[in-house]
Image (cartoon, rainbow, N blue to C red):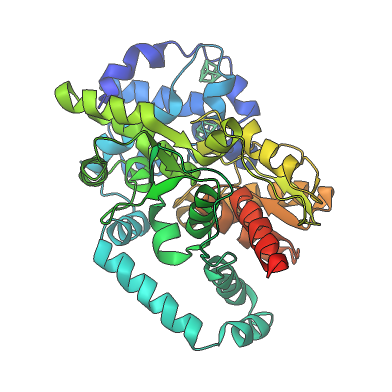
Length: 418
Ligand code: SF4
Ligand code: SF4
């Protein structure tokens, strides 16, 4: 993986034009130069030239980036700010400890035992039947009540796994699906939907036992050692004969893309082979003649939010929309600035709640302006951030992955046939 110094030529390319100011969600909130790409690059240049050192203050500035890559898309000089900041966070972590909240989250996500315990706790909580009463009293509990509501919303399993009869002849493709932590341990709805849609369309899907977190949270915090540990485990579980590795969660897909950056020699050849097999479910569906039932409908007003890890990192924007527009009964409304960061950005919302909320509020206003009753998106982190924003503004809108909407149609069709 590239060291900060190795980016020095790319940093020098910054002409200080300031165009990044117009797209950086953080700068839009704070108007502070050291919060935007140009300002951070000036500071990092000082570190490379040994005029500055990684102080606690600079460490804080490095945390003030959602990693949305909007500045890269807009930068006429092609400055790789997100990669540069991530590399700087790694070097900074050897001098100043990674933020405590980030360390706690990483330690939970990297441990299969802790994730299984979380899953066990959530199952018990659901079985007690107190979700509804908690939702009712949360209205009187201010901010704490909102957090409880957001939590409850994340654990509702919209799609229960149901084996459906395939409508097509069985495909010979060997598919591996990587569900990611949230879909495996917090809410299986998206995982169920992906499996049901693929199976209904004649694909046999393998989900190897033992997958761990994709590592995106660790990479983004600059904890490269944890990232590599997780990457190695996941890579080792992919069978040789795999044709495609499918992801739905935007961050997981990017996580697999990042694996390539971290390897050299023969490991890089293997990582490259795997990266070539990586496909997002919406891209896969778009290229497959996917079955859409004509007898069931999803009569809702839906808008779509582009997760940064899907639109800017994996360049997938049209495919989820194409699927939504094929759904019978669905009224699709595009929101303003759909591809703008929602402010959640993994642990960013926990470390910088005020700035994060400011960014989220703008996104929520754009959602309100569409009068949609459903927000579709494909990222576990965005879903948490959007839920918080919608609940805080008392907007009653559901948040679903497009794949859950398609699975819902399949379930409706199956129940009509009973
Ligand atoms: S847009 Fe690019 S070149 Fe211009 S100031 Fe920002 S980082 Fe530098
Ligand atoms: S990656 Fe996003 S948040 Fe970070 S500096 Fe660039 S535009 Fe701002």
